[in-house]
Length: 216
Image (tube, rainbow, N blue to C red; front, side, top):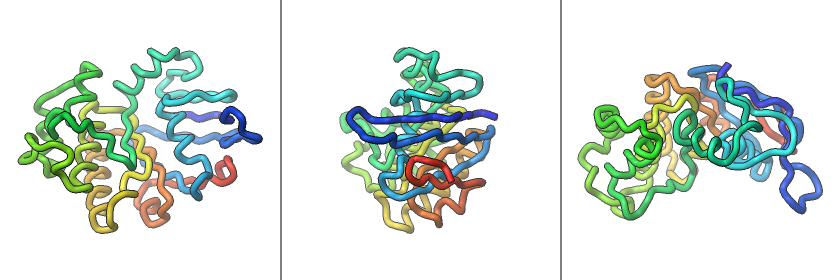
């Protein structure tokens, strides 16, 4: 088992009830898992907890033997620079950096930059001829491919994706998803993907549904 989420509860300050209540799930190495649910069901919140972007008040999350509750802020940041990488619906590229610089950014931060691997990713993602361009000069599909490449340049053990095709038309989104699944399979990373689309969820190894803050 790579990821173990055990009885996690999360309540935002001022909220009357928890957004996540006693949530448990697991993810094996190299497995792909889709989490579906209505808007506001807590899907993105759960992804953010697994990505060590936010804390929780009860339960435990363990990634490859590392317990999140034992990590300070520096430890959580270190996790995001190595074992865990994230892809969001908003591409979150750095406007002042070129495609090549964006691709290498997180790997350089994590001390894991491999120019050969980054070049391979650029080629596989159809970005090899776009390295000198800036995000504003790219289509939405191209920007999301850069975001996927930037995440996978780290060679993470776990890739988290929050509605990664949500800002793309169906054809472009399907092409981006195909590339992401191929690269995840080739690298051996596990994938935890949040989506509202049952069609996309059906492409992954396994799926869970989140409703009213609980996994069903």
